[in-house]
Image 1: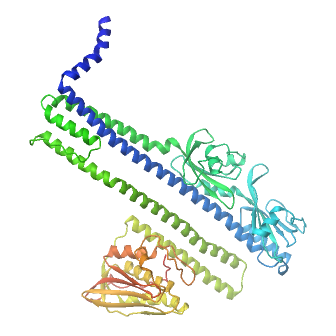
Image 2 (image 1 turned 60 degrees about the vertical axis):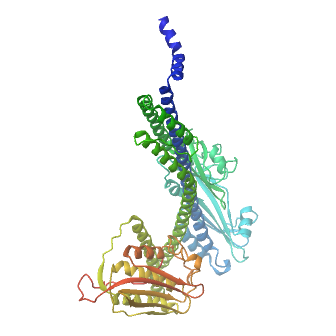
Image 3 (image 1 turned 180 degrees about the vertical axis):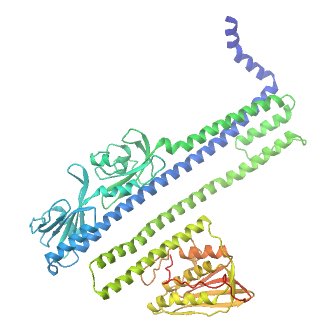
Amino acid sequence: MNRSIVWILALPRRVLGSFRRHLSVQVAAAIIGVAALVLGAAGGWSLHLFASAQMTAIASMHQLQATTAAASIQRFVDDIETHLRSLIGPSWTSTSEDDRRVDAVRILRALPAVSTLRLVDPQGREQLRVSRLGPDIAGSGTDLSQTEAYKAARQQGRHVGAVYFLDGSEPYVTIHVGGASDRRGSVVADVNLKLISDTIAAIRIGDAGRAFLVDSQGRLISHPDISLVLRRTEVASLRHVQAALGRSPSGEEGNLVAGQDLEGGSVLSAHALLPSLGWSVITELPRAEALAPVNTAVRLSMATLLGGLLAAVACGALIARAMLRPIETLTVGAAKIGAGDLDHRIAVSGANELAQLGDRFNDMAASLQAERDTLEEKVRLRTRELALANQAKSRFLASASHDLRQPLHALSLFVDELRARPTGERRARLNDNLSDAVGRLNDMFDAILDVSRIEAGSIRPQILRFPLAPLLAALHAIFSPAAAAKGLRLSIDDSAAWVESDKSLLQRILQNLVANAVRYTVTGDVRLVCSEADGQLTIAVIDTGPGISPDLQSEIFHEFFRASTPGQSGERGLGLGLFIVDNYAKLLGHPVSLRSEPDSGSCFELCVPTVPAAAENPLSRPSQRQPASAPRVQ
């Protein structure tokens, strides 16, 4: 027993002596050390880059979710204010009490979130109260003129009060909208904020992430668990909530904040402020879920490093004694490369495996040197590309939601007017307005669907030979009414050429180009000119519009690009029309070119291959069904 203890205690000294006496041991140790250094440096750098990218992606996702939810909630409040403002538009003396009651009931039905409406005359006295929670009251005469809310609404146009909980449970806020004119009254609405829950509940962040809404005091207004809201849960003490409320140094938008949720779990959080309301949308994602990919990568790297070290020990033990000198050369060279001297090259004579290994070390050094020289630039460019892509998507989501909301809102107003049983002439105009609004929605969704199909790569062109004349005639029939309505001269050449293309995709390209020309041309004419030469038909769409500056001509075919100059009607589109044109043209192999100068109009040219004329057959006949109206370029 004593001899075993003595032997164990003497083991480190024996190993050190063997290391000093045997060069093979030294060579093997050198190989192991170099392998560990290279693997550790590469693994550590890779982990660093991966962890940085992961945290950047998490922060971007959090902030995007919070910002999107904040925009939806702001639109919810703005929509209520818009409806309320319609009540105070007419002069108080120009409307009767019955008219005001009818308008108030209509607004109450249109806004499910509003529980009570109070109409106040220009002197600040309540004249009518309409409520879902109790009987209507007329002529109460309650004087509100001295309240801070009334004064603020008269001076600033509106006043949003502090959040309160009706009967100690459901959250409410009072919105006071007033007119600056002495002839107009004001309106006070009690809004049930429980209806915001759908917006908050729809946010999905990872598997266990969530979002919630708090007021300026840190009280829950909306949460996926509605019971927490009804119990008036206070969350102002949570670290990430304090950051959102500006009570801690780390509370800047765009930064992830570490904290603990109501259950005591560790979370990462981001937030977005609604400045006009003083509320904040806050997101939470469990820290373990956010860092799970990083932890997995660490374990894999450690396993790889351990495997590399074991392989190095085995190789060193087998080859150290027979190849000491080449190994010494390799060791010295690898040490220099591992230390950062990537200009160093290893020279091993012969054509055996060690010489080849020396060549591989040299190749590795050259690759690391090249990678080191370009990695920083690649990271910078990639980061910029991701940032631009996120900004473009955010702008598109904001603009698309706004543009889609306009026809939907118009549809709601037109339907309300139809329910009021208007005269026959007014009903005919409303039907036309409804048709136009539905057409705008269809065009927007068609453009979004086209972009989705392009990005998914699901479009398969059906190349046919067909005459171009029916397609040109259809274009003239589609766009003549729109051009005439704007006072433009529209001319489309009649061509006898036969072309080889996909009929529906070619028609979509030309429709988008002509629609763009009609949209942005205020005066003058829009022409479609065909010219044939060398087996190619050049189709040119020429307008006398505002033109396009040279610095924007390389960007107008990009996704989500929106013209800075709106059309005559004020519409700007979704920024998808020319992106669809460019992608369809590339898919068909039809080159598209642009010639334009500011204030001198634009000319888009499309080259399509021609074929000899042939007898028509069912596959080459043009469709007999044409769109009812011109599509709107998105």
